[in-house]
Length: 336
Figure 1 (cartoon, rainbow, N blue to C red):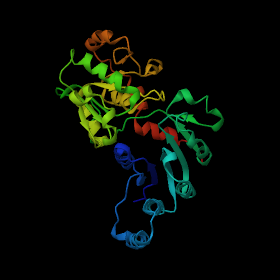
Figure 2: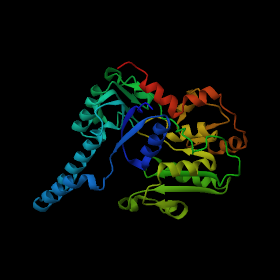
Figure 3: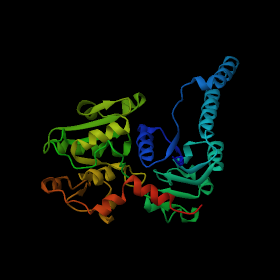
Figure 4: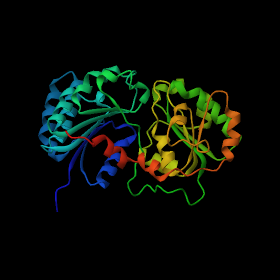
């Protein structure tokens, strides 16, 4: 049996999104090595590294630097598992050190980056762009702004590996609306306003709201009373299962960028209606007024009609276009 192509995935730990990407890559036939931003526990194979770390910790007053040194060493050791990777995909390259990225580049036939946040908001990433064969951003409104850097547009995607049924729900949904959000001041007001309105129209609904304990004083009393407030993350795969079991998907974008969130593509995948604050959906090939409602500060009353409209099935070719399989093929389709 021929060896599987090696794929190096360097990715944030946030919400364990990397888990579903790794599963999708494995399903597509790759042998995947994952390097993420979270902590790594010591293992038996790390015994020398652990001993070195503990000795340094005993005699050093800078514990934070020592911890960072260990994590950098651990991540580089993961990269060094193979001398050659057919593809390396780095998501949010600004979260990783220069030495780690260059180590990965040396071992990669194709070295690609995907940035799912605004470049305007994160200018620290700009000097890194030149290291990559291709650098994709998810906000197409920034393409012209950063044209000189050679950035390309690629939206987010939906994962399409077995186990997360991509067919429409056969049984009654658990919720009319399920929504999960992390705390961000730009969307707190509209989320509260929408909740007050939609709960007079639809039941049951569930709103999960994730925030750090230090932000407790910033969270409005209304949210604490009516939302399911969490101080720990809901893993991304679990989010998908909850979203799959709802009738309508919500998407409240942040003010800092105009890229489409993963929720837009979950709606495409599971053929669900989506209420969003991102008005750029009306310009896309997947848009249909029965399926997407663009919420503003003044048009909540117009939702009544939208809620009664039947979902209009999407052209299968357009739906497939936004799968992870198609997304990956697009970003790696070049001669190195």
